[in-house]
Amino acid sequence: MKVFTVVGARPQFIKAAVLSRALANADFPVQEILVHTGQHYDSNMSDVFFEELSIPKPMYSLGLGGGTHGQNTGRMIEQLEALMLKEKPDWVLVYGDTDSTLAGAIAAAKLHIPIAHVEAGLRSYNRAMPEEINRLLTDHVSTVLFAPTDVAKRNLLKEGIAEDKIHIVGDVMCDATEFYKSKAVKPVWFDELDVKAGEYVLCTIHRAENTDSETRLKAILEGIEASGEKIVLPLHPRTKNKIKMLGVELAGNIFIVEPVGYLEMNWLESNCKLIATDSGGVQKEAYFHNKHCVTLRDETEWVELVEQNVNTLVGASPDKISCALRSDRAVVFAEGLYGNGDAAGNIIKTLKGRA
Image 1 (tube, rainbow, N blue to C red):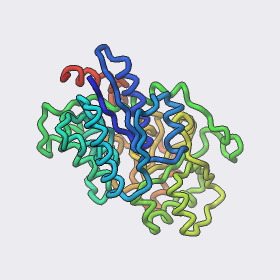
Image 2 (tube, one colour):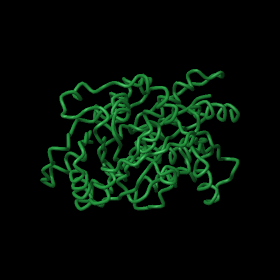
Image 3 (cartoon, rainbow, N blue to C red):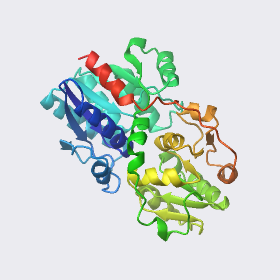
Image 4 (cartoon, rainbow, N blue to C red):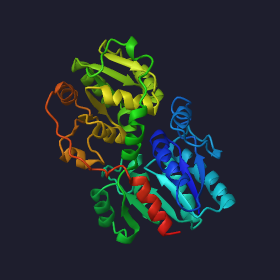
């Protein structure tokens, strides 16, 4: 079996690390062709992930990041189609909801190559988000849909997708957290900050709905500043540029640091007081590390975390953000919301059964 895997962004590198390892150790012959589109092209955002997660070096690196959504997706489709024609894979494997995901799915669908979508069925029901469009279209052209939860499966069934195409396998991010938790690395700069383990809020801001809106970005920064908590903020290059353009002076309780690798992020998540983020992946990682999450969005795909009261949606309201970050409420974490760390094995079994 030849599997053509498309990755392009940090969360996909982490998921690929889990599944690529499982494919390499499968009990049947598998060849994986790993293709990196270059959607995240900064070395701090990309190269370090391949190195520290021991992901095999991509067979093809396309270097296509930096354009608009339309430019990126179009160029990716063109080059991925050429590679698929060359490699003639049995499956095209895509992850999540990025432009790389959609490009891989469209290229494969046009060539009638079976598509496996990992993390299928997530819905925010906010079609202003590019990610929502990507995941919707990818799900509807996929051959096999690997849903992480019952909620994700119900979403797909409501949209008319045949039940026999949907497989609840758990979440590969759960696999990743369990595997890499013991390998977490303390950032070398941490002791230079005026913060202590267990006493800081870990914050990430990168989603376009926040960074492209001057009003929302200023409101979020106002809220985390007003909380008075010590905020460790690994800043995405794109967000750093936006803040610079706005001329915003950050308060002394906000410590901006460079983007971190996955193993450093694991350490920061394990040792923080709580997490504030607009990232879908970090919301789950907060749960895996038993940390309350304050989500800087108006909705989330991970509705079960909100239902379990371990995730609080605050949007871009300064008052809600400030209040949530100061909260000391006790949080009880239910087990097994995203499987038992065996999602990759479940995916491999399904692919083998359809070989």
